[in-house]
Length: 236
Image 1 (tube, rainbow, N blue to C red):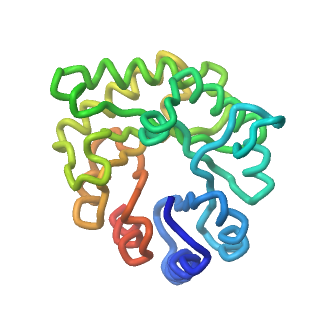
Image 2: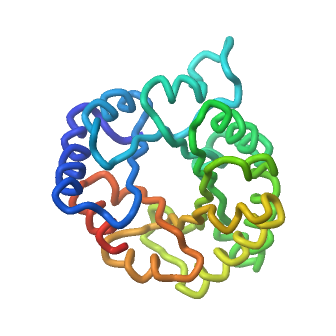
């Protein structure tokens, strides 16, 4: 829940820089729903894609305040983040609910970024691998193998805290996520990006992105300023 119309200047600055020096990575911004259309217009023709932060599993109807996947597409979105830990914790989203949203998104051409991750208590109890594997099994549907989607591993205890797992811990979980994903979608897992999200910043991006199994980054606070986000993009 960050961003007003005035902040579109940061997105435009990002796109301008990438126009002069193209990125090695695919780049997308997922602003609040109020900015999706305006950001899409501001970035039209640029290398920066636009996405949403969630969507409803329902196609339409009496669901005041909700936004369908088709509405996001209509506003200019190409991707959508689903099952973010803040949605799971604050809005009681379940694995089954996230899966339903992902299928609804793919049905209208949106590319889901499905988030999974363990809490500090689960990490300390040695349950991290079990938790993320269970979340993959419940949040990803076998039929998603026929379309494009990504998974984002976000250790809940590292989001916005400045804390970051060790490189070994990140590699372990990404390997577990890859194995669990293969159980669900088969060979499609080999070309499904597994992103890392959790206090990614310019100072640690390069070492994180070099970890085997890490296929990109889901960036939070550091994406609000073009200069910081570019520092991460250039680390690829």
